Length: 638
Image (cartoon, rainbow, N blue to C red; front, side, top):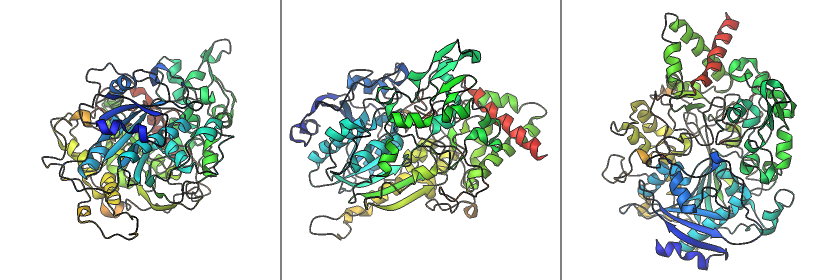
Protein backbone atom coordinates (compact mmCIF):
# COMPACT_ATOMS: atom_id res chain seq x y z
CA UNK A 1 0.00 0.00 0.00
CA UNK A 2 2.85 2.39 0.88
CA UNK A 3 4.39 1.91 -2.55
CA UNK A 4 1.00 2.49 -4.17
CA UNK A 5 0.50 5.75 -2.31
CA UNK A 6 4.00 7.06 -3.03
CA UNK A 7 3.76 6.87 -6.81
CA UNK A 8 2.69 10.47 -7.39
CA UNK A 9 6.31 11.54 -7.80
CA UNK A 10 6.62 9.70 -11.09
CA UNK A 11 3.24 10.49 -12.55
CA UNK A 12 2.56 12.36 -15.76
CA UNK A 13 0.49 14.79 -13.67
CA UNK A 14 3.29 16.56 -11.77
CA UNK A 15 0.98 18.50 -9.46
CA UNK A 16 -0.81 15.40 -8.16
CA UNK A 17 0.24 14.64 -4.60
CA UNK A 18 -0.59 11.85 -2.22
CA UNK A 19 -2.02 13.65 0.81
CA UNK A 20 -2.53 10.76 3.22
CA UNK A 21 -3.62 7.20 3.78
CA UNK A 22 -7.14 6.77 5.07
CA UNK A 23 -8.58 3.95 7.16
CA UNK A 24 -9.70 0.92 5.16
CA UNK A 25 -13.40 0.21 4.78
CA UNK A 26 -14.40 -2.15 7.59
CA UNK A 27 -16.52 -4.47 5.46
CA UNK A 28 -15.08 -5.18 2.04
CA UNK A 29 -11.56 -4.06 2.88
CA UNK A 30 -11.00 -1.25 0.39
CA UNK A 31 -7.64 0.50 0.85
CA UNK A 32 -8.29 4.24 0.65
CA UNK A 33 -5.99 7.16 -0.10
CA UNK A 34 -6.49 10.88 -0.59
CA UNK A 35 -4.84 12.61 -3.54
CA UNK A 36 -4.79 16.33 -4.26
CA UNK A 37 -4.13 17.98 -7.62
CA UNK A 38 -2.31 21.21 -6.89
CA UNK A 39 -2.39 22.60 -10.42
CA UNK A 40 -3.85 26.07 -10.91
CA UNK A 41 -6.59 27.33 -13.18
CA UNK A 42 -8.92 24.32 -13.43
CA UNK A 43 -10.22 23.14 -10.09
CA UNK A 44 -12.49 25.21 -7.88
CA UNK A 45 -14.53 24.99 -4.72
CA UNK A 46 -17.93 23.78 -5.90
CA UNK A 47 -21.20 24.68 -4.21
CA UNK A 48 -22.71 22.20 -1.77
CA UNK A 49 -26.10 21.98 -0.13
CA UNK A 50 -26.46 20.32 3.28
CA UNK A 51 -28.08 17.33 1.57
CA UNK A 52 -25.16 16.93 -0.87
CA UNK A 53 -22.38 17.12 1.74
CA UNK A 54 -20.49 14.05 2.88
CA UNK A 55 -21.01 12.61 6.33
CA UNK A 56 -23.35 10.21 8.09
CA UNK A 57 -23.98 10.10 11.83
CA UNK A 58 -25.89 6.82 11.56
CA UNK A 59 -24.27 4.19 13.79
CA UNK A 60 -22.02 1.99 11.72
CA UNK A 61 -21.78 4.48 8.85
CA UNK A 62 -23.90 2.24 6.58
CA UNK A 63 -23.42 4.37 3.46
CA UNK A 64 -19.65 4.85 3.98
CA UNK A 65 -20.33 8.59 3.67
CA UNK A 66 -18.62 9.38 6.99
CA UNK A 67 -15.57 7.36 6.02
CA UNK A 68 -15.37 9.39 2.82
CA UNK A 69 -15.83 12.68 4.69
CA UNK A 70 -13.05 11.74 7.11
CA UNK A 71 -10.74 10.82 4.24
CA UNK A 72 -11.40 14.13 2.48
CA UNK A 73 -11.09 15.93 5.80
CA UNK A 74 -14.20 17.97 5.01
CA UNK A 75 -17.90 17.48 4.36
CA UNK A 76 -17.68 19.84 1.36
CA UNK A 77 -14.19 19.19 -0.08
CA UNK A 78 -12.47 21.13 -2.83
CA UNK A 79 -12.72 19.60 -6.30
CA UNK A 80 -8.93 19.25 -6.50
CA UNK A 81 -9.21 16.40 -3.94
CA UNK A 82 -10.08 12.82 -4.88
CA UNK A 83 -10.19 9.53 -2.97
CA UNK A 84 -8.73 6.50 -4.71
CA UNK A 85 -9.73 3.03 -3.52
CA UNK A 86 -7.91 -0.26 -4.11
CA UNK A 87 -8.96 -3.88 -3.63
CA UNK A 88 -6.35 -6.58 -4.18
CA UNK A 89 -7.20 -9.80 -6.01
CA UNK A 90 -8.07 -12.92 -4.04
CA UNK A 91 -4.95 -14.95 -3.17
CA UNK A 92 -5.84 -18.06 -5.15
CA UNK A 93 -7.38 -16.34 -8.17
CA UNK A 94 -5.78 -16.58 -11.62
CA UNK A 95 -3.57 -13.65 -12.65
CA UNK A 96 -5.10 -11.10 -14.99
CA UNK A 97 -3.60 -8.93 -17.69
CA UNK A 98 -5.15 -5.60 -16.76
CA UNK A 99 -6.32 -3.69 -13.70
CA UNK A 100 -9.86 -2.31 -13.63
CA UNK A 101 -11.02 1.18 -12.61
CA UNK A 102 -14.63 1.69 -11.48
CA UNK A 103 -16.19 5.15 -11.83
CA UNK A 104 -19.43 5.72 -9.85
CA UNK A 105 -22.55 7.66 -10.72
CA UNK A 106 -24.09 10.67 -9.01
CA UNK A 107 -25.18 10.85 -5.42
CA UNK A 108 -22.81 8.23 -4.07
CA UNK A 109 -19.31 7.05 -3.31
CA UNK A 110 -17.47 4.16 -4.92
CA UNK A 111 -17.27 2.11 -1.70
CA UNK A 112 -21.02 1.78 -1.51
CA UNK A 113 -21.76 1.74 -5.22
CA UNK A 114 -19.43 -0.99 -6.32
CA UNK A 115 -19.40 -3.49 -3.46
CA UNK A 116 -20.64 -6.53 -5.35
CA UNK A 117 -18.91 -5.69 -8.62
CA UNK A 118 -15.60 -5.14 -6.86
CA UNK A 119 -15.89 -8.38 -4.88
CA UNK A 120 -16.78 -10.32 -8.05
CA UNK A 121 -13.76 -8.89 -9.87
CA UNK A 122 -11.50 -9.52 -6.89
CA UNK A 123 -12.50 -13.17 -6.72
CA UNK A 124 -11.84 -13.47 -10.46
CA UNK A 125 -8.27 -12.24 -9.93
CA UNK A 126 -8.43 -8.58 -10.92
CA UNK A 127 -6.71 -5.64 -9.29
CA UNK A 128 -9.68 -3.36 -8.65
CA UNK A 129 -9.52 0.41 -8.24
CA UNK A 130 -12.32 2.89 -7.79
CA UNK A 131 -12.64 6.63 -7.46
CA UNK A 132 -14.77 8.88 -5.27
CA UNK A 133 -15.05 12.48 -6.43
CA UNK A 134 -15.16 15.45 -4.09
CA UNK A 135 -18.66 16.46 -5.22
CA UNK A 136 -21.02 13.64 -6.08
CA UNK A 137 -22.96 15.89 -8.48
CA UNK A 138 -19.90 17.83 -9.57
CA UNK A 139 -18.61 19.34 -12.80
CA UNK A 140 -17.90 16.48 -15.20
CA UNK A 141 -14.87 18.24 -16.69
CA UNK A 142 -13.20 18.59 -13.30
CA UNK A 143 -14.02 14.96 -12.65
CA UNK A 144 -12.60 14.03 -16.06
CA UNK A 145 -9.28 15.43 -14.89
CA UNK A 146 -9.52 13.29 -11.76
CA UNK A 147 -10.23 10.23 -13.91
CA UNK A 148 -7.00 11.04 -15.80
CA UNK A 149 -5.20 11.40 -12.45
CA UNK A 150 -6.51 8.06 -11.19
CA UNK A 151 -5.45 6.34 -14.40
CA UNK A 152 -1.98 7.86 -14.02
CA UNK A 153 -1.64 6.48 -10.50
CA UNK A 154 -2.84 3.04 -11.58
CA UNK A 155 -0.68 3.12 -14.70
CA UNK A 156 2.42 3.84 -12.63
CA UNK A 157 1.73 0.74 -10.61
CA UNK A 158 0.97 -1.36 -13.71
CA UNK A 159 3.34 0.16 -16.29
CA UNK A 160 2.99 -2.56 -18.89
CA UNK A 161 -0.79 -2.72 -19.06
CA UNK A 162 -3.68 -0.70 -20.33
CA UNK A 163 -6.50 -0.15 -17.85
CA UNK A 164 -10.07 -1.32 -18.33
CA UNK A 165 -12.71 1.12 -17.06
CA UNK A 166 -16.31 0.54 -15.97
CA UNK A 167 -18.39 3.71 -15.69
CA UNK A 168 -21.94 3.66 -14.35
CA UNK A 169 -24.58 6.32 -14.91
CA UNK A 170 -23.20 9.85 -14.47
CA UNK A 171 -19.73 8.32 -14.14
CA UNK A 172 -19.87 7.78 -17.87
CA UNK A 173 -19.70 11.53 -18.47
CA UNK A 174 -16.24 12.37 -17.02
CA UNK A 175 -14.82 9.12 -18.34
CA UNK A 176 -16.11 9.88 -21.82
CA UNK A 177 -14.81 13.45 -21.68
CA UNK A 178 -11.29 12.30 -20.88
CA UNK A 179 -11.41 9.54 -23.51
CA UNK A 180 -12.57 12.14 -26.06
CA UNK A 181 -10.01 14.81 -25.19
CA UNK A 182 -7.77 14.30 -28.21
CA UNK A 183 -5.32 17.05 -29.30
CA UNK A 184 -7.85 18.51 -31.73
CA UNK A 185 -10.79 18.52 -29.33
CA UNK A 186 -12.22 22.00 -28.81
CA UNK A 187 -14.01 22.64 -25.52
CA UNK A 188 -13.49 26.41 -25.57
CA UNK A 189 -17.18 27.18 -25.93
CA UNK A 190 -18.18 24.51 -23.43
CA UNK A 191 -15.58 24.59 -20.67
CA UNK A 192 -12.72 27.05 -21.34
CA UNK A 193 -10.70 26.05 -18.28
CA UNK A 194 -10.67 22.37 -19.26
CA UNK A 195 -9.95 23.27 -22.87
CA UNK A 196 -6.85 25.14 -21.71
CA UNK A 197 -5.63 22.88 -18.91
CA UNK A 198 -7.33 19.49 -19.11
CA UNK A 199 -5.11 16.47 -19.64
CA UNK A 200 -5.22 15.25 -23.23
CA UNK A 201 -6.05 11.56 -23.56
CA UNK A 202 -2.88 9.54 -22.88
CA UNK A 203 -3.89 6.26 -24.54
CA UNK A 204 -4.15 4.43 -21.23
CA UNK A 205 -7.64 2.87 -21.52
CA UNK A 206 -8.07 -0.59 -23.00
CA UNK A 207 -11.75 -1.41 -22.72
CA UNK A 208 -14.40 1.10 -21.70
CA UNK A 209 -17.78 -0.08 -20.40
CA UNK A 210 -20.72 2.30 -20.17
CA UNK A 211 -23.26 0.80 -17.73
CA UNK A 212 -26.52 2.76 -17.88
CA UNK A 213 -24.72 5.96 -18.88
CA UNK A 214 -26.64 8.88 -20.44
CA UNK A 215 -24.76 8.76 -23.73
CA UNK A 216 -27.47 10.85 -25.43
CA UNK A 217 -28.36 12.83 -22.32
CA UNK A 218 -31.55 13.05 -20.31
CA UNK A 219 -34.26 15.48 -19.24
CA UNK A 220 -35.71 13.79 -16.15
CA UNK A 221 -36.16 16.69 -13.79
CA UNK A 222 -37.82 18.85 -16.46
CA UNK A 223 -40.01 15.97 -17.61
CA UNK A 224 -41.17 15.03 -14.09
CA UNK A 225 -41.36 18.30 -12.12
CA UNK A 226 -43.27 17.03 -9.08
CA UNK A 227 -40.03 16.46 -7.15
CA UNK A 228 -39.65 20.25 -6.95
CA UNK A 229 -42.12 20.14 -4.06
CA UNK A 230 -39.69 18.35 -1.75
CA UNK A 231 -37.51 21.39 -0.89
CA UNK A 232 -40.66 23.53 -0.69
CA UNK A 233 -41.84 21.39 2.21
CA UNK A 234 -38.47 21.12 3.88
CA UNK A 235 -37.30 17.70 2.66
CA UNK A 236 -34.90 18.44 -0.22
CA UNK A 237 -33.60 15.46 -2.15
CA UNK A 238 -30.04 14.63 -3.08
CA UNK A 239 -30.98 15.34 -6.69
CA UNK A 240 -31.77 18.53 -8.62
CA UNK A 241 -35.04 20.25 -9.45
CA UNK A 242 -36.19 22.41 -12.34
CA UNK A 243 -38.10 25.31 -10.78
CA UNK A 244 -36.41 28.59 -10.07
CA UNK A 245 -39.24 29.88 -7.88
CA UNK A 246 -42.28 28.43 -6.14
CA UNK A 247 -45.25 30.66 -5.36
CA UNK A 248 -47.05 29.65 -2.20
CA UNK A 249 -50.72 29.00 -2.98
CA UNK A 250 -50.00 30.44 -6.43
CA UNK A 251 -49.47 33.89 -4.92
CA UNK A 252 -46.65 35.79 -6.71
CA UNK A 253 -46.16 37.85 -3.54
CA UNK A 254 -45.22 34.71 -1.58
CA UNK A 255 -42.19 33.39 -3.50
CA UNK A 256 -39.91 30.59 -2.33
CA UNK A 257 -36.43 30.63 -3.90
CA UNK A 258 -35.62 27.15 -5.28
CA UNK A 259 -32.64 28.08 -7.45
CA UNK A 260 -30.09 26.50 -5.03
CA UNK A 261 -31.90 23.17 -5.48
CA UNK A 262 -32.20 23.49 -9.24
CA UNK A 263 -30.20 22.76 -12.39
CA UNK A 264 -29.66 26.46 -12.99
CA UNK A 265 -26.52 28.40 -12.22
CA UNK A 266 -24.08 26.64 -14.53
CA UNK A 267 -20.71 26.10 -12.90
CA UNK A 268 -21.83 28.04 -9.83
CA UNK A 269 -24.90 25.88 -9.24
CA UNK A 270 -25.26 23.08 -6.72
CA UNK A 271 -25.62 20.41 -9.41
CA UNK A 272 -23.26 21.42 -12.25
CA UNK A 273 -22.55 17.86 -13.41
CA UNK A 274 -26.23 17.07 -13.53
CA UNK A 275 -26.93 20.11 -15.71
CA UNK A 276 -24.16 19.03 -18.09
CA UNK A 277 -26.06 15.80 -18.80
CA UNK A 278 -29.21 17.57 -20.00
CA UNK A 279 -30.56 16.99 -23.49
CA UNK A 280 -34.11 17.43 -24.82
CA UNK A 281 -36.11 14.27 -25.41
CA UNK A 282 -39.54 15.80 -25.93
CA UNK A 283 -39.43 15.15 -29.67
CA UNK A 284 -38.65 11.50 -29.08
CA UNK A 285 -41.06 10.72 -26.24
CA UNK A 286 -44.02 12.94 -25.38
CA UNK A 287 -43.92 14.75 -22.08
CA UNK A 288 -45.94 12.82 -19.49
CA UNK A 289 -48.29 15.71 -18.89
CA UNK A 290 -49.45 15.55 -22.50
CA UNK A 291 -50.07 11.79 -22.46
CA UNK A 292 -53.45 10.87 -20.88
CA UNK A 293 -52.63 7.17 -21.22
CA UNK A 294 -50.19 7.60 -18.33
CA UNK A 295 -53.08 8.68 -16.13
CA UNK A 296 -52.84 10.80 -13.02
CA UNK A 297 -49.41 9.29 -12.37
CA UNK A 298 -48.11 11.66 -15.02
CA UNK A 299 -50.68 14.42 -15.22
CA UNK A 300 -50.17 15.43 -11.58
CA UNK A 301 -46.82 16.82 -12.72
CA UNK A 302 -47.60 20.41 -11.80
CA UNK A 303 -46.86 23.09 -14.39
CA UNK A 304 -45.30 20.51 -16.71
CA UNK A 305 -45.43 22.68 -19.84
CA UNK A 306 -43.88 25.82 -18.37
CA UNK A 307 -41.38 23.72 -16.45
CA UNK A 308 -40.03 22.18 -19.64
CA UNK A 309 -40.27 25.14 -22.00
CA UNK A 310 -39.93 28.01 -19.54
CA UNK A 311 -42.33 30.56 -18.13
CA UNK A 312 -44.72 31.10 -15.25
CA UNK A 313 -47.04 28.26 -14.29
CA UNK A 314 -49.77 28.19 -11.69
CA UNK A 315 -47.35 27.83 -8.79
CA UNK A 316 -43.88 28.02 -10.31
CA UNK A 317 -41.40 29.81 -12.51
CA UNK A 318 -38.93 27.91 -14.71
CA UNK A 319 -36.35 29.01 -17.25
CA UNK A 320 -36.89 25.77 -19.18
CA UNK A 321 -34.55 23.03 -20.24
CA UNK A 322 -33.17 25.00 -23.18
CA UNK A 323 -31.81 27.75 -20.94
CA UNK A 324 -30.39 25.23 -18.49
CA UNK A 325 -28.55 23.45 -21.32
CA UNK A 326 -27.18 26.72 -22.68
CA UNK A 327 -26.12 27.87 -19.22
CA UNK A 328 -24.19 24.64 -18.66
CA UNK A 329 -22.44 24.79 -22.03
CA UNK A 330 -24.36 22.29 -24.16
CA UNK A 331 -22.09 19.45 -23.09
CA UNK A 332 -24.02 16.49 -24.50
CA UNK A 333 -24.21 18.07 -27.94
CA UNK A 334 -20.47 18.81 -27.83
CA UNK A 335 -19.67 15.23 -26.83
CA UNK A 336 -21.87 13.88 -29.60
CA UNK A 337 -19.70 15.84 -32.06
CA UNK A 338 -16.38 14.64 -30.67
CA UNK A 339 -16.10 10.87 -30.30
CA UNK A 340 -13.82 8.81 -28.08
CA UNK A 341 -10.34 7.64 -29.01
CA UNK A 342 -10.53 5.04 -31.82
CA UNK A 343 -8.15 2.63 -30.06
CA UNK A 344 -10.53 2.08 -27.13
CA UNK A 345 -12.75 -1.00 -27.25
CA UNK A 346 -16.26 0.06 -26.27
CA UNK A 347 -19.12 -1.81 -24.58
CA UNK A 348 -22.51 -0.25 -23.89
CA UNK A 349 -25.05 -1.73 -21.49
CA UNK A 350 -28.66 -0.88 -20.72
CA UNK A 351 -31.41 -2.30 -18.55
CA UNK A 352 -35.09 -2.55 -19.43
CA UNK A 353 -36.88 -2.94 -16.10
CA UNK A 354 -38.59 0.23 -14.75
CA UNK A 355 -39.48 -1.37 -11.40
CA UNK A 356 -37.33 0.18 -8.68
CA UNK A 357 -37.11 -0.54 -5.00
CA UNK A 358 -39.11 1.84 -2.85
CA UNK A 359 -37.23 0.88 0.29
CA UNK A 360 -40.60 -0.21 1.59
CA UNK A 361 -42.51 3.04 1.10
CA UNK A 362 -46.14 2.43 0.46
CA UNK A 363 -46.46 -0.83 2.35
CA UNK A 364 -48.87 0.60 4.89
CA UNK A 365 -50.87 2.45 2.25
CA UNK A 366 -51.35 -0.65 0.17
CA UNK A 367 -52.20 -2.77 3.20
CA UNK A 368 -55.15 -0.50 3.91
CA UNK A 369 -56.02 0.08 0.25
CA UNK A 370 -56.47 -3.63 -0.46
CA UNK A 371 -57.84 -4.69 2.93
CA UNK A 372 -61.58 -4.10 2.68
CA UNK A 373 -64.39 -5.91 0.89
CA UNK A 374 -63.77 -4.09 -2.40
CA UNK A 375 -60.07 -4.94 -2.39
CA UNK A 376 -60.19 -7.46 -5.22
CA UNK A 377 -61.94 -5.11 -7.63
CA UNK A 378 -59.70 -2.23 -6.63
CA UNK A 379 -56.59 -4.32 -7.13
CA UNK A 380 -57.80 -5.36 -10.58
CA UNK A 381 -58.28 -1.71 -11.50
CA UNK A 382 -54.79 -0.90 -10.34
CA UNK A 383 -53.13 -3.87 -12.03
CA UNK A 384 -54.92 -3.10 -15.31
CA UNK A 385 -53.56 0.45 -15.09
CA UNK A 386 -50.02 -0.79 -14.57
CA UNK A 387 -50.36 -3.22 -17.47
CA UNK A 388 -51.65 -0.43 -19.71
CA UNK A 389 -48.63 1.71 -18.86
CA UNK A 390 -46.15 -1.09 -19.51
CA UNK A 391 -47.85 -2.03 -22.77
CA UNK A 392 -47.03 1.42 -24.13
CA UNK A 393 -43.24 1.22 -24.07
CA UNK A 394 -42.14 -2.12 -22.58
CA UNK A 395 -43.15 -4.88 -25.03
CA UNK A 396 -40.78 -7.20 -23.15
CA UNK A 397 -42.51 -6.63 -19.78
CA UNK A 398 -43.59 -10.30 -19.48
CA UNK A 399 -39.91 -10.88 -18.69
CA UNK A 400 -40.42 -9.13 -15.34
CA UNK A 401 -44.16 -9.72 -14.92
CA UNK A 402 -43.58 -11.77 -11.76
CA UNK A 403 -42.14 -8.66 -10.10
CA UNK A 404 -45.43 -6.77 -10.26
CA UNK A 405 -46.60 -8.10 -6.86
CA UNK A 406 -43.89 -5.93 -5.31
CA UNK A 407 -45.74 -2.92 -6.63
CA UNK A 408 -48.91 -4.11 -4.92
CA UNK A 409 -46.97 -4.75 -1.73
CA UNK A 410 -45.62 -1.22 -1.77
CA UNK A 411 -41.99 -2.34 -1.74
CA UNK A 412 -41.33 -1.18 -5.30
CA UNK A 413 -42.60 1.47 -7.69
CA UNK A 414 -42.48 2.27 -11.37
CA UNK A 415 -39.67 4.66 -12.23
CA UNK A 416 -39.32 6.31 -15.63
CA UNK A 417 -42.25 5.04 -17.70
CA UNK A 418 -42.72 7.72 -20.33
CA UNK A 419 -40.41 5.76 -22.61
CA UNK A 420 -38.48 2.47 -22.53
CA UNK A 421 -36.10 2.74 -19.59
CA UNK A 422 -34.26 1.02 -16.77
CA UNK A 423 -36.43 2.96 -14.32
CA UNK A 424 -34.11 5.97 -14.45
CA UNK A 425 -32.56 6.30 -17.91
CA UNK A 426 -34.06 5.85 -21.35
CA UNK A 427 -32.75 2.73 -23.06
CA UNK A 428 -32.18 4.78 -26.22
CA UNK A 429 -29.77 7.03 -24.35
CA UNK A 430 -27.93 4.21 -22.59
CA UNK A 431 -27.34 2.34 -25.86
CA UNK A 432 -26.69 5.32 -28.15
CA UNK A 433 -23.51 4.71 -30.16
CA UNK A 434 -23.64 7.64 -32.55
CA UNK A 435 -21.39 10.02 -30.64
CA UNK A 436 -18.88 7.69 -29.04
CA UNK A 437 -18.00 6.01 -32.37
CA UNK A 438 -17.63 9.21 -34.36
CA UNK A 439 -13.83 8.98 -34.57
CA UNK A 440 -13.73 5.30 -35.42
CA UNK A 441 -13.97 3.60 -32.04
CA UNK A 442 -15.91 0.36 -32.24
CA UNK A 443 -18.65 -0.85 -29.93
CA UNK A 444 -17.74 -4.52 -29.62
CA UNK A 445 -20.96 -5.37 -27.83
CA UNK A 446 -24.21 -3.58 -27.06
CA UNK A 447 -25.92 -5.51 -24.30
CA UNK A 448 -29.54 -5.18 -23.22
CA UNK A 449 -30.76 -6.79 -19.98
CA UNK A 450 -34.57 -6.58 -20.05
CA UNK A 451 -35.03 -7.80 -16.45
CA UNK A 452 -32.51 -5.47 -14.79
CA UNK A 453 -33.16 -1.95 -13.56
CA UNK A 454 -30.68 0.90 -13.29
CA UNK A 455 -29.22 -0.21 -9.98
CA UNK A 456 -29.17 -3.91 -10.69
CA UNK A 457 -26.70 -3.19 -13.49
CA UNK A 458 -24.15 -2.75 -10.72
CA UNK A 459 -24.79 -5.92 -8.79
CA UNK A 460 -26.74 -8.71 -10.48
CA UNK A 461 -24.81 -11.96 -10.30
CA UNK A 462 -23.76 -14.92 -8.17
CA UNK A 463 -22.69 -12.96 -5.10
CA UNK A 464 -25.82 -10.86 -5.05
CA UNK A 465 -27.86 -14.06 -5.28
CA UNK A 466 -25.93 -15.56 -2.38
CA UNK A 467 -26.54 -12.43 -0.35
CA UNK A 468 -30.30 -12.75 -0.78
CA UNK A 469 -30.15 -16.48 -0.01
CA UNK A 470 -28.75 -15.83 3.45
CA UNK A 471 -31.59 -15.89 6.01
CA UNK A 472 -29.37 -14.30 8.65
CA UNK A 473 -28.60 -10.90 7.13
CA UNK A 474 -32.06 -9.32 7.09
CA UNK A 475 -32.29 -9.24 3.30
CA UNK A 476 -33.38 -12.82 2.71
CA UNK A 477 -35.41 -12.97 -0.49
CA UNK A 478 -35.50 -16.23 -2.46
CA UNK A 479 -37.23 -14.57 -5.41
CA UNK A 480 -34.46 -12.04 -5.81
CA UNK A 481 -31.90 -14.80 -5.34
CA UNK A 482 -33.54 -16.84 -8.12
CA UNK A 483 -33.49 -13.79 -10.39
CA UNK A 484 -29.77 -13.25 -9.90
CA UNK A 485 -29.04 -16.98 -10.30
CA UNK A 486 -30.52 -16.83 -13.79
CA UNK A 487 -27.56 -16.64 -16.22
CA UNK A 488 -29.49 -14.23 -18.44
CA UNK A 489 -29.43 -11.68 -15.61
CA UNK A 490 -25.84 -12.15 -14.41
CA UNK A 491 -24.30 -8.97 -15.70
CA UNK A 492 -21.25 -9.27 -13.43
CA UNK A 493 -20.36 -12.70 -14.76
CA UNK A 494 -20.77 -11.31 -18.28
CA UNK A 495 -18.35 -8.51 -17.34
CA UNK A 496 -15.80 -10.93 -15.91
CA UNK A 497 -15.98 -13.08 -19.04
CA UNK A 498 -15.15 -10.11 -21.27
CA UNK A 499 -12.42 -8.76 -19.00
CA UNK A 500 -10.84 -12.22 -18.88
CA UNK A 501 -10.38 -12.44 -22.64
CA UNK A 502 -6.73 -12.39 -23.72
CA UNK A 503 -5.47 -9.00 -24.85
CA UNK A 504 -2.85 -8.25 -27.49
CA UNK A 505 0.68 -7.65 -26.29
CA UNK A 506 3.56 -6.02 -28.14
CA UNK A 507 4.80 -8.34 -30.87
CA UNK A 508 1.92 -10.78 -30.35
CA UNK A 509 -1.29 -9.30 -31.76
CA UNK A 510 -3.21 -12.60 -31.56
CA UNK A 511 -2.17 -14.25 -28.30
CA UNK A 512 -3.28 -17.71 -27.38
CA UNK A 513 -5.46 -17.85 -24.27
CA UNK A 514 -3.39 -18.07 -21.12
CA UNK A 515 -4.15 -21.16 -19.04
CA UNK A 516 -5.01 -18.87 -16.17
CA UNK A 517 -7.80 -17.36 -18.21
CA UNK A 518 -9.85 -20.54 -18.10
CA UNK A 519 -11.61 -19.52 -14.92
CA UNK A 520 -13.61 -16.56 -16.11
CA UNK A 521 -16.02 -16.33 -13.21
CA UNK A 522 -15.69 -15.96 -9.47
CA UNK A 523 -15.58 -19.05 -7.30
CA UNK A 524 -18.92 -20.45 -6.25
CA UNK A 525 -20.56 -17.96 -3.98
CA UNK A 526 -20.94 -20.54 -1.24
CA UNK A 527 -17.28 -21.51 -1.28
CA UNK A 528 -15.21 -20.51 1.78
CA UNK A 529 -13.42 -17.68 -0.03
CA UNK A 530 -16.44 -16.41 -1.92
CA UNK A 531 -17.04 -13.43 0.35
CA UNK A 532 -14.73 -11.88 2.93
CA UNK A 533 -15.72 -12.83 6.48
CA UNK A 534 -16.73 -9.25 7.21
CA UNK A 535 -18.79 -8.77 4.04
CA UNK A 536 -22.20 -9.00 5.59
CA UNK A 537 -25.12 -6.62 5.27
CA UNK A 538 -22.79 -3.65 5.02
CA UNK A 539 -21.23 -5.18 1.94
CA UNK A 540 -24.53 -5.03 0.15
CA UNK A 541 -24.17 -3.21 -3.07
CA UNK A 542 -24.67 -0.18 -4.82
CA UNK A 543 -25.19 3.28 -5.64
CA UNK A 544 -28.85 3.63 -6.01
CA UNK A 545 -32.03 1.98 -4.92
CA UNK A 546 -31.42 -1.70 -4.27
CA UNK A 547 -32.92 -3.71 -7.08
CA UNK A 548 -35.62 -4.89 -4.78
CA UNK A 549 -37.83 -5.94 -7.63
CA UNK A 550 -37.45 -9.66 -7.91
CA UNK A 551 -39.16 -12.27 -9.91
CA UNK A 552 -38.95 -15.99 -10.34
CA UNK A 553 -37.71 -17.00 -13.72
CA UNK A 554 -40.12 -16.18 -16.48
CA UNK A 555 -41.28 -18.73 -19.01
CA UNK A 556 -38.48 -19.25 -21.49
CA UNK A 557 -40.66 -18.56 -24.46
CA UNK A 558 -41.84 -15.29 -22.93
CA UNK A 559 -38.46 -13.92 -21.93
CA UNK A 560 -36.49 -12.01 -24.58
CA UNK A 561 -32.87 -12.86 -25.01
CA UNK A 562 -31.00 -10.93 -22.36
CA UNK A 563 -28.56 -9.54 -24.85
CA UNK A 564 -30.86 -8.88 -27.73
CA UNK A 565 -31.97 -5.39 -28.59
CA UNK A 566 -35.75 -5.36 -28.87
CA UNK A 567 -36.74 -4.76 -32.50
CA UNK A 568 -39.05 -1.96 -31.39
CA UNK A 569 -36.28 0.02 -29.73
CA UNK A 570 -34.67 3.17 -31.02
CA UNK A 571 -35.41 6.80 -31.59
CA UNK A 572 -36.95 6.12 -34.98
CA UNK A 573 -38.58 2.82 -34.14
CA UNK A 574 -41.59 4.00 -32.15
CA UNK A 575 -44.84 3.72 -34.11
CA UNK A 576 -46.04 7.06 -35.39
CA UNK A 577 -49.24 6.82 -33.41
CA UNK A 578 -47.56 5.79 -30.19
CA UNK A 579 -47.46 8.48 -27.51
CA UNK A 580 -43.92 9.55 -26.87
CA UNK A 581 -42.57 9.67 -23.41
CA UNK A 582 -40.20 11.04 -20.98
CA UNK A 583 -36.57 11.14 -20.45
CA UNK A 584 -34.50 9.29 -18.10
CA UNK A 585 -31.43 9.85 -16.13
CA UNK A 586 -29.40 7.98 -13.71
CA UNK A 587 -29.23 11.18 -11.90
CA UNK A 588 -29.30 14.31 -13.94
CA UNK A 589 -32.44 15.60 -12.58
CA UNK A 590 -35.10 15.00 -10.09
CA UNK A 591 -35.79 11.38 -9.36
CA UNK A 592 -38.04 9.48 -11.70
CA UNK A 593 -41.72 9.82 -10.93
CA UNK A 594 -42.38 8.79 -7.38
CA UNK A 595 -38.78 8.06 -6.53
CA UNK A 596 -37.93 8.80 -2.95
CA UNK A 597 -34.42 9.90 -3.88
CA UNK A 598 -32.88 8.95 -7.21
CA UNK A 599 -29.71 10.82 -6.44
CA UNK A 600 -28.91 8.96 -3.23
CA UNK A 601 -31.20 5.99 -3.07
CA UNK A 602 -31.23 3.83 -0.03
CA UNK A 603 -29.38 6.50 1.91
CA UNK A 604 -30.55 5.17 5.25
CA UNK A 605 -29.67 1.57 4.45
CA UNK A 606 -26.62 -0.66 4.76
CA UNK A 607 -23.97 -0.03 2.16
CA UNK A 608 -25.80 0.04 -1.11
CA UNK A 609 -28.93 -1.73 0.10
CA UNK A 610 -32.54 -0.84 0.07
CA UNK A 611 -34.77 -1.74 2.91
CA UNK A 612 -36.10 -5.23 3.25
CA UNK A 613 -39.47 -5.72 1.60
CA UNK A 614 -42.26 -4.22 3.59
CA UNK A 615 -40.18 -1.77 5.62
CA UNK A 616 -42.29 1.30 6.45
CA UNK A 617 -41.73 4.75 5.08
CA UNK A 618 -43.39 8.12 5.33
CA UNK A 619 -43.50 8.57 1.52
CA UNK A 620 -46.25 6.06 0.82
CA UNK A 621 -48.45 8.81 -0.54
CA UNK A 622 -46.30 9.01 -3.67
CA UNK A 623 -48.00 5.89 -5.05
CA UNK A 624 -51.53 7.29 -4.84
CA UNK A 625 -51.43 8.99 -8.29
CA UNK A 626 -50.74 5.66 -9.95
CA UNK A 627 -53.60 4.06 -8.05
CA UNK A 628 -55.93 6.77 -9.23
CA UNK A 629 -54.55 6.50 -12.75
CA UNK A 630 -55.28 2.78 -12.84
CA UNK A 631 -58.88 3.35 -11.82
CA UNK A 632 -59.22 6.13 -14.40
CA UNK A 633 -57.95 3.95 -17.22
CA UNK A 634 -60.20 1.07 -16.18
CA UNK A 635 -63.26 3.29 -16.26
CA UNK A 636 -62.30 4.73 -19.64
CA UNK A 637 -62.24 1.23 -21.10
CA UNK A 638 -65.50 0.15 -19.43
